[in-house]
Structures are given as C-alpha cells and as structure tokens.
Length: 386
Image (cartoon, rainbow, N blue to C red; front, top):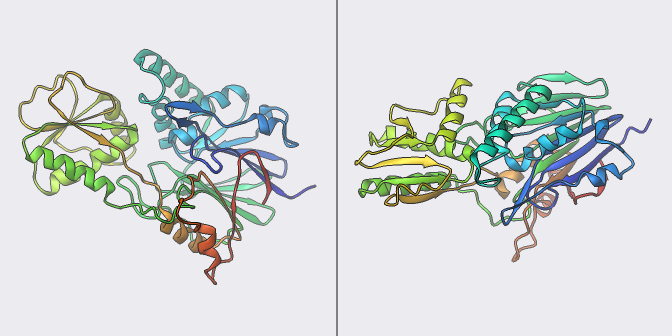
C-alpha cells in the first residue's frame, strides 16, 4: 500500500479566505477547515471540484473526517454546505467552536440585511452541527485505526485547536490561526515539549511580510480612544466587524474601566450579549457590574454601546470602528517554527509579499544554522507529497 501523505489546498493557499485543505493519510480522506472568503463584499468558496477530479476521491461521500480549527468565517463558513453534501462524515471541533460557528457563519455584516433569514440560517447551521459535530477536548487523543489525532490549544480565539496526526511513524501538525502570546480571551498555543514533528501545515498570514508587526497594544489603542472620548463628554457607539471581536473588545474595556475606577456604563447589543453569556457559561469571565443588555438606552451621562450594526437613532454618538488583528506577525511565526523545528513547513493562508522586500520566512530560516525546516508555500489545487 502507498504510505505517502498527500496534501492539497482547495482554498486559502497563497491568498486569504476560504481556507480548506485536503490531506490523505493511507485510506483516510480528511478535510482540514472549510471556510469562505470575502473580496470586496463578495463571498467566494473553496474549490472542491479540483478534489473530485483528482485521483483521490470521486464523491464527497468518500470524505472520512472533517476537522475545524476555529470558528472564524474564513475557516468554517463553507461547512454547512459541505455537510449537506456528505452523508455520514463527522466533523470534529471543540464545543466552543461549535457554538461560535452558529453566529460567525452567517455574520450580520457579510451575508444578508434580513434578520429573519439570518436567524433561520443560524438555526439550520445549529441543526447540522448538532447532528454531525463530534466535540473534542484539548489533550484528547482519538485512534482512527489508520491514524491517531491529538488536539492542543491554539490560542487566537476561544475553542481554537491544533491537531497532531500520527501516521506510519510520522507526525503532522495542522494549525489554523494561532497565537504565540496571550490574547484577551485565551492563552497562547500549548504543545508538549519533545514532540518530533515531521511536517507542520500552518496558516501564515504574514509569512512573506517581515515589515508587519502585530502591535500588542492595537486593541489597547482602540480602548484608549474610547476612554478619551468619554472623558471629553462624548457618548460612543463601537461598531464591531466580527462578533467575536466585540467580545474581546468588551473584555479589555471592562478591565480598563475597573482598573481605573472609571465606572462608565457599557450597553451590549443582543447578538454580542448572547455570545458573551455563552462564553461565561463555558468558564470565560467577561462581564462586570457596569455591563447591560442594550434595550431602550436613554442615559444622559457618558456611556458606550457595543454592537454590529448602524444605530441611526443615536445620531449624536461618536462612532468607533472596532477592528484589530490577533494574527501572529512575521517574527512570532519564525519563533513558532524554530520552537517545533519540523522537517517541512507547508505554509498557507498567506497575504501578498511586501513590494519592497524579497525577504520571506523561508529566507529567514535558511540563514539559521539550527533550523532544519524546508518551507513550502502551497499553491491552491496543486498536489504535494509530504
């Protein structure tokens, strides 16, 4: 039997969006993540046709397992459509990822302005996940006969996980987005020391952009902006681009509010509020006594509203766009690869290279005498033997 491991990026290769990866371990056909992309407010999907015309499978019913790293749209958005096209294929994810996916998949800002339709689609997604999702825990190992898989915390957002596949004495680590350092709601990634990883397949947004530095206070600067407006007598509406970012922003704003005894009231739109309450049920503390569900907010004193849509009834509010990145930057990615020191690093989910530099993570590792890593920037629809 051919013991080769085959890999193909169906989306999210050397571009951002629609992350979806096929890997073949012996007789097992796996999908790693299944996202949507957004380009100028137009959605695009992974190309599963190239898989169906490959030598590996002729029908999506031949997919054995699906693994979801985390609940951002570009990693989970296409999952409902794929699940409808597969009959008995289980999808493995954490419970937190399953919950967040209900809301991230049909995020209000990207899909449709009609609330009723959004809620119907969210419920349809919930039904599919309840039917096919298999919840997993960190440090859990599952023996799939052809291979073993173990799950580890990835950081980045709550519920995100890395997956270590063991097949024929080889170890392949897959990670979607991850964090090296703590984020507002999670710690950084966690892997046991001493694991000899042969290949890492990893999302590397800034792997070709050494100029990018993820300022750890990027979120902090937004909070400072809001506090400054409040202290100058303004009320503030904070519009979030992603619901999960609204939760992270609330967490940091609450911490600043409490640390300095500012006591500004924060009103939270229902959809953000619902995610906050669920996260607290899953042991992630966020809210304080100054947090309220947004109803008929008629306060005259300075306060904050956090929501995901335009609120025309508050025309005098200062508007703050809440958007920031939790992706690792170039230097953090180098740090991650050097720590696990795999033989191969298959890098996907990349943004375009800096125009004024030819430096990439490949160039950086080549100059490190302690690095043994061969870098592959995987192109979409191309088959790689790993």
